[in-house]
Image (cartoon, rainbow, N blue to C red):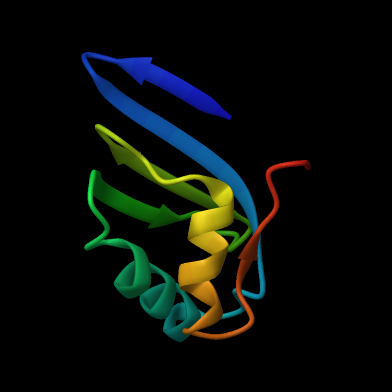
Length: 78
């Protein structure tokens, strides 16, 4: 899902493979320094990734980055 307000985009994707706070920390660490990303959050129930920023990466690029950090994957088709 994609929303825009004040030149800031918000993307939300279902995320797979996140099962604990350690996983959340790895996902946030992997994505927080990507160009255009200003905020990274994983929902409390560990099922949704939320990104905010001005030029957010595609789901494909997000998955490429996450591959290096573990078995995490976003699924934009859910």
